Each structure stands twice: as C-alpha cells, then as structure tokens.
Amino acid sequence: MHALLDKLSSTVSSYLLFQIESGAQVIQLFDTWAGELNRKDYEEFALPYARKIFDAIGSRAHRIIYVNGCASILESITATGAD
Image (tube, rainbow, N blue to C red):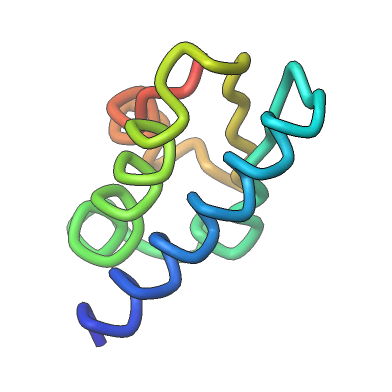
C-alpha cells in the first residue's frame, strides 16, 4: 500500500509542478475522503504523502488542502505543509 501511495504522490507532485510552470499560482489538494480516517490511520496513510506533495511544491505556489469532515484529524492536517 505504501509503495503505491508513494508512487501516486510522486506523480501528483510532478503534475502540480507542471501546472505551476504553466502559470498556476495556487494549488489545492483535495483529500475528500481523508476525513473518514481516524487520526492513527490518517497519520500513516495520508499525512506523509500530502506532506511529500507540498514539500515538492515548496514556495513555488500557495498550497491549499481540502479534507471533508476533518474535525477529528484537524491538528494532524496542519502538519501537511499547506499554507
């Protein structure tokens, strides 16, 4: 599972960097279903990969993350690196 998530986050990072090189000033990562995870699962299966994506973007663009129903994991979401 982690190998797949790592590959997907690398692919998403490359795509978003292309968008930025093409003029995008803001990127938004929609992790709509992450709110269904408990904190432990979010921190294992979602957080590291969102952080990897935002680390790849760095300061090249403003970074937004959207997670639906995220009250139980809100503190963990702040560690993604989103602005």
